[in-house]
Structure formats: C-alpha cells, structure tokens
Length: 210
Image 1 (cartoon, rainbow, N blue to C red):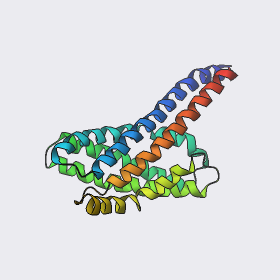
Image 2: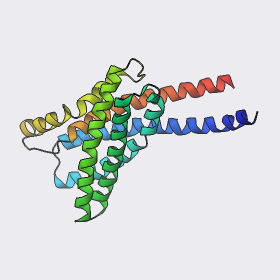
Image 3: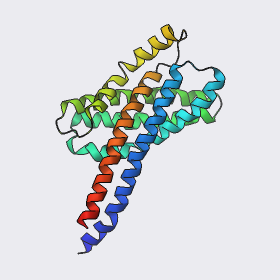
Image 4: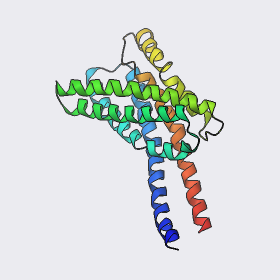
C-alpha cells in the first residue's frame, strides 16, 4: 500500500517534467531551424549580434529536451544507440556552455569558449549520426523515421550543403555548422511534436486508469 501511494504521487510529477522536456524539443527545434536558416543567409556583423544570442538560447532549450528523448527510446537502446546518445548529449551540453561563454565574455576566455563550442558540436554531430543509424537499424524505435534520416544527414549532408550554398549561391562562405543546425532543428520539430503527443496521450490514459 505504501509503495502504491509513493508511486501515485511521483508519476504525475515525472510526467509533467517529461512533457515539459518534450515541449522544449519542439520550441528549441523551431529556434534552431531558424538559426540555421539565418546563418545560411550570410549575416553581416550587426545581424549576427542578434542571431548569436538567439542561437545560444535555442541550444540551451534543446539541451532540456534530451531527457524526453531518452525516456521515450531507451527501451530499445543497444550499444550504438547508447554511444550515440551519450556523444550527442555530452557534446551538445559542452557546445551550449561554450557558446554561452563565447557570447558573454571577451578574449581570451571567449576564444576558449568558442573552441569548446566547436569540439562539442562536432561530438554532438557524430552522436546524431550514430543515433540516427541505430534508429534506422532498429525495429523497436518508436520515433518517426524522418527523424532518423535527418539525424543521419545532419553532419555528412549538412556541412557540404552549407559550404556549397553560402559559397556558390550567396557568394560568400559562412559557418559550415549552419546546415547541421537546420537539419537538427527540423528533426527536433518532428520529434518534439511526437514526444509531446505521446506524453499527452500517456497522461490522459493515466487519468482514465485512476
């Protein structure tokens, strides 16, 4: 009886946190996609001053979405998915913190923060690729397949696309991570909506059961 009462109190709280995390994925994904599109337009210095803090907030919001993804998909995780999610999570958090340091400080601290951003974003991109491949290989993955394809494409397609588009269409090379940001943002728009709907459905079922 005691165990049931504790569970009865804790489950709704956990559910609310997971729904908030899923909503962070949807909102952060939209912000990240906008950031990627803005960077692909080849910003001038004045425009970049507005986009940089916007992108920083987007990365921090998406870091809050990672628990919902893990809670939803962990049941089928094998070695590749575990390594991929770990790289994605640690790299994304490091990149987010590095970008905050870059935005709020002056050289040489900001330069160290930017290096942390680059290394963290690279690790996160490799993690996206590994996790996306694991999703495509697993029949147990519940996320929409388009999410896996976007994660797989973020690094090997996003970087060449950003370089080619900004160089040959916009006439000036720009940040190569704009492409991965755009694709990752789109992945989270789809994934965040899916996770939000799933958490809402589970919450409704919980109410019916009670």
